[in-house]
Length: 245
Length: 248
Image 1 (tube, helix red, strand yellow):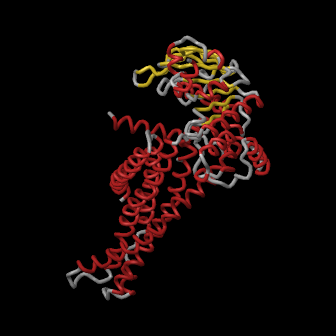
Image 2 (cartoon, rainbow over the protein chains, first blue to last red):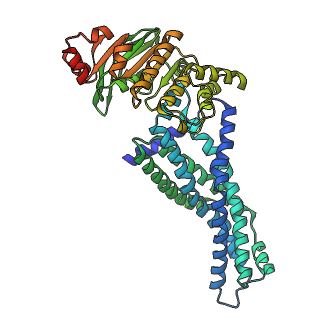
Image 3 (cartoon, chains in turn yellow, brown):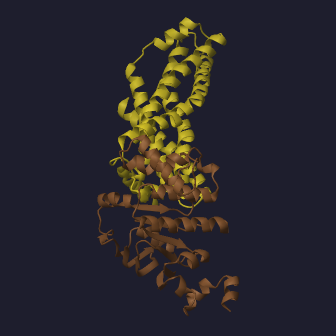
């Protein structure tokens, strides 16, 4: 029963989030601020993880190629497929659920327990729209950009590992990357990233918004936000993959 | 004037306030007093619409707040200002942006006009030149004063203060009390203060409503409260040993 209550309350909150905002100029400014706070500030960790992830995928692919019948450009091809289809959009989104999700939930949760949200409501401001909508728009816009950068850096990481480890030549690796390239796969990856971004921000916003109590509950809300966002990302990854591929 | 007619509110079947009817006058300091857990904060949250009442009605100068649509309430709220117990300043904004916030959201004034109003409000609460400070850099008393400045920025008709001097030293508490009273008289506002601070009651209680176990137990003013024979009030007022001694 509790689950149905939470689902219902989540959708009711979304209705408030997307109802009329007070001032568009304020919304635009907040979106830009959130793009920097939630997106640009996560770029460093995304870059580091992507480079190493790409390197590991390339090394493992090369390590598993036993048969001389399998061409060496398979290293580049497999790295690209793994990075574009799964590692960048899903794994990086899971990591962003941890970084961004806990950030959103603890920020809004703290505002709730310190009566800042009550202050907004007394002023007559649509608090969910003011607090959560800019975060959703910012992440739905910036996360696909982060993932595109992650894909690029992942492939660079794979190249560095393959070439420096004397696994394949630069030409062979690049040839593998270019082989049987389907542009729709990038669209699919970026689309699911946008869906994951919506899940991360709305679920985290929900858990923060309905925090009750004090500092301990703010921490619990952050944990719940990350756990539920991650579960939903995995679930929707399956659904979107089944529908689009 | 704010008129409350027979309002009740319960949570999970437990009645927190029951059938309260009381009138809060314009231009004076109206106090709601009572022990912790008596229901005074719930009553105030019902008055500002943070909680919906189960039954009864609230009138703001003959306008029925309980029956207003969500849209009408939103417009009406611009006439309200509220000072929260913990000040509720926005952590991410400096003092200037905190006070400017309602002006940014609800007016079409340009930055210079808004800044002029912000500086006026900050001067009024004796906090000039503090525009660029963040809430984390302010003392408890300063936070309360910034919160008062934010509450009066839109020139409200109704001011609600939830335990404005809790957590403050006695001297700063008096400064905050005096400031609220001065502003109330100056702007002819209807001010309601939730408190259990006896200094505030004795000095500023032009009208006092005593809430006991969720019910309106007694009504009167600062002179009457010291001489009433009501047991529950006396238990509350003379809980302080010094006052008890003085009474004897």
